[in-house]
Structures are given as structure tokens and as C-alpha cells.
Image: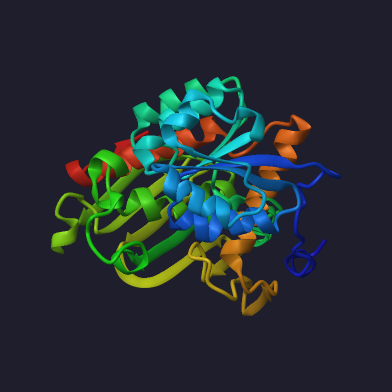
Length: 361
């Protein structure tokens, strides 16, 4: 197949093998992302259904349950940990602040339930290792939604097929106005190091180009350098209102990445090879249309695959992929071991910024 044919035949669900079935999901934490992105994505999915909702209070859980006809039980966190309504769900989607992933993933695993955990998998590498160990006997998937995006999957295929020659460099950026997007004030968990982990920006945004580059290149980072700083009062407790960092991968490719929680809404990923370049933009932030471009010499081929709800599409693909693997009893990727590499990379980036030295993973 030529590069043009490959680029213009982006297909959805190259992974799908499930014919039928329903994975019943417990939504653990009912913040804006769960209510506005995850639950609508499950409603639009082929193989998933929200049957349990879990929140800090009965009132909030019951309010959400009343709006969702498929929900069979509304629980508090304590009731979820204690094992109530375990007959009503098969898997738990965990979307709490980072440092609360571990207790609820552990509880789900103790009840024999599969786990889909938001990224990063925990607040620190040590806590992430504990989570992966605690879920060793159940299916664990970490919610890197870019890995089920059909255009990202095509980028990976093009790189593997040599469409741009040998990869040389990756350029990635993700930025947003966090206080506008997430909260109108500073009292929110991404600014609390006890909940977010090493910092507010690379943990929350920089993880996207890190992990997507790993997936597209099929390579892992071996060293990191970084610079970061915070200048506005809201970010006094975190080191990285703005960040720039580089990674070297084990295939020799270098990645140069930037991320900001106080920048214009922007995202892109570029892979430069010895013979050409792949560009995906805008990306990471669910903006439409998202266009994949292959440039070879002075020619460009591009595809806008027609999606106008990229966030919803990526999340639906993610949940259905998870269901496909869990219901068929097949291995899942990205799994916990995959996520631990990202946690090592995140730790290295923050250490590099703190010390001003190259940190080797």
C-alpha cells in the first residue's frame, strides 16, 4: 500500500473483535470530566453501560443516577470500598484526583472487577507501583484515549511502515487556560501537590505528548531534560505553570515538548523522519476538525476524517476497546506496566527541572 493509500484509508476500530455483549461500568467520581465526557461516551458506546455511580455524597450520586436511566445503584466512596452493589457492575472507571486512584482501584480489584484508571495512573511512581501490584489479578487499563484515536493509530502504522523514513524528532505541545477550563477559582486539586503529584502541568498535560510519542514511535524514553516555572499566584504551590522538556527515546529519536496551564488552547504532535513529516493538529484537546498530514518532499497529503466531536469519539473508542478486551478475556494495552514507564518519565522530567541536569531513566 502506498503512503497516500495508507493515509487516506484511516479506519475505525482496527482492534474490534467483539460481536456483542455489555460491560457494566461503575463511574467512580462524578466531576465534570466524568459527567460531561465519560458518561456520554459510554451512552454512545456499543459495548458499555453505566450501571453504578459513586461520589462523596448520596445526594450527588442520586442526582446523577436520576439523570441516567441505566444506573442501578448510587453509592458513596465508602460504600463502594465496602463492596456494596458489586452485582451491578463488572468494571470501575476511576476519575478521582491522581492521589486517590490507588484506594479505589484496589477496592475494585478486591471485588474482582476490571479497572479503567485515568492517567497519570497515580500521583507518584511509588504509588503507581502499588496500584499496579494491587490490580495484578484483574484487567487494568490506563485511560490514554489517544491510543484508540484512529488518526493516532494510523500515525503509528505509517511510522512502522517507513513512510517518513527513520524517525528523528518529535515535537509536541499542549496548553490551556486551566482556571477557565476546570474552575473559576484556585481551590481545585490540580494545584494541590498532595493530590496531583509532582506538578500541575507536565502531570496533567505533558503526559499527552509523552505517551502519544511512545505509542506512535513504539519506543520508550531513556533520558530527560527540563525547565519549568510558575509566575501567577494561583500556581504558587506547584513548580510548573509553564514547562519545556526533552526526552531521548531508546530508538535514538528526540522529543521536544512544551506544556502550559496558562496558555492559549493549543495542541499538536509532529514526527519528523529522514524522508518526511507527519503532523496531527489540533490534537489532545478534542478540537475539530483534527487533521493528519503526511509531507514528503514538496507534496502534502492530509485527511480530516469527518469527526466533529473528537473528545466524544476518542472516549467512546476507549470504552469500547476496554469492553472488547475485558469481555473476551484478552490482554489490554495500555496496561499498568506501560503506565509505569510514563511515571518514571514524569519523575525524571521534574527531577531534571529541579536539578538542571540530564536525568536517566
